[in-house]
Image (cartoon, rainbow, N blue to C red):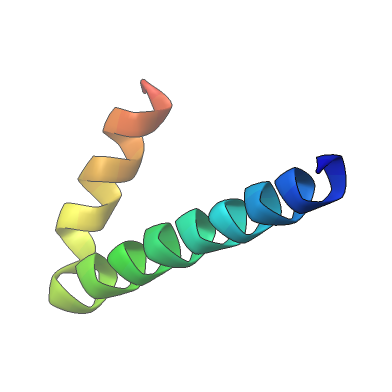
Length: 45
């Protein structure tokens, strides 16, 4: 049970990372200036 839970958690984590990477890649392809602004906003700079 614990092992299955850990595996599920890992899969979800990798899925989230993939989604974030994909969205970042899409935004970066669309406009680099917008991405820079988003990065600064996210960093709180």
